[in-house]
Image 1 (cartoon, rainbow, N blue to C red):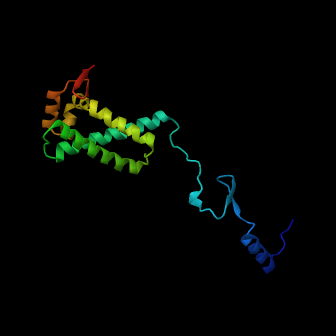
Image 2 (image 1 turned 45 degrees about the vertical axis):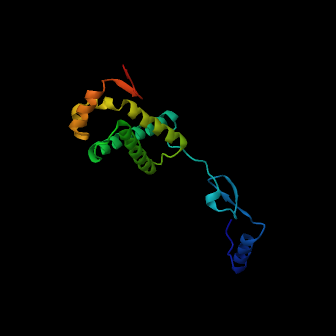
Image 3 (image 1 turned 180 degrees about the horizontal axis):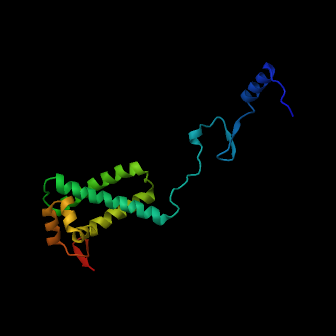
Amino acid sequence: MAHRKQDINDFNARVKRINSPRNKSYFDPDLGMHVPKRVPRDKIKKAKVREESSFLALFIVSAVLGAFGYFAAQVIRVRYIPEVDTAMMALTVDLLVALWVVAMVTALTNKRSLFDRLSQAVGIYAMVVAGHNLIWRWPEQMAMIYTPEHVQYVMATTTEMSVIVGASTYTF
């Protein structure tokens, strides 16, 4: 079937159909439905596609980001911030810097949902209570990352394979 030649009347009829007040929607192939023309496209909510299919994978990635944030905060405090007076002050500085580092890293990786934030908090807490075991596991490498004095201090005040919760130390 051949197309017939269109003239100005066909064009004007098409413009009239488009501008008709009865023509209030268009078909969106992504949604598979008709969408009103008067609604801006950003107000139409499309299904969010998750990259990871497993909540365990999401949890692990976010917890590692949180642990990395606390590790980086400790390195920054030990190397660049002068000695603080008390352990509570050191913990406060570490937590504030860790939250800042985690906020910056998660802004780049787009891990900002509530589940991701809770997982990052778990990662930070895991480093708070058990991060000193990294120094026991690799003392020479940690002396290069931190300072040799800090590594000696941690090894003198903690025990290997332990978890510190508040003032209590649990050794495994």
